Length: 125
Image (tube, rainbow, N blue to C red; front, side, top):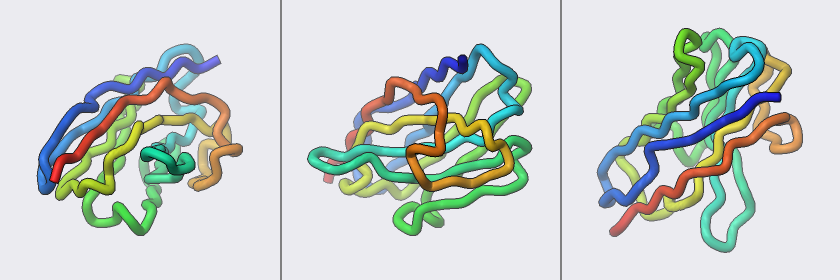
């Protein structure tokens, strides 16, 4: 089992920045690729970015490319999502997830084995 706990959500104005953190415990963190997903009001949960176990490869959804940055600190068992130039459409509950296929950058929810409880991000216009 892997336990994931997100933090760092909140309210920000359009154009502002937030950094989300996801702390992992349980199994060896480097056994997993990590991803961030989000679910806006009335929408399905969708992919944001993913990162492989070493941090050497990353993949972003087109909607956040150039604005969001995913990173990880394997010494701290933590994955981060730096969000800049935020837009109202970024408003959502953000979830981190762990994929035991640690070298795979998957955009598909069902490929992730463990999920956090989510953190709310609200961007005001």
